[in-house]
Amino acid sequence: MKTGIEIKLSFVWLNIACWFTKPVITIKDNGRYERKWGTHFFELPAGKYKIEIFVPNLNIAKQYNIIVRENEVTNLSFFANPLKARL
Image (cartoon, rainbow, N blue to C red; front, side, top):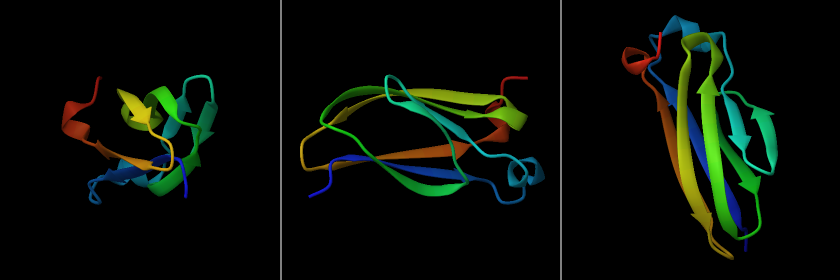
């Protein structure tokens, strides 16, 4: 059985700026990953994780505290809302 985090990255399809950027996922003590929009799985051991998702062109960032349990997949959804962007 898998243990880890599944992260779904999505945005409003009419937002043209999102088409030309890749979100950056930072998992504290694990690494920094630039990924395309969509769903991504990160295999991680059970424990507590601090995750930050950042969209460079829109200056949107969100932090999450996640608990991963043994033999479970923890789901996380991130929606880039340009109306809440920090300009």
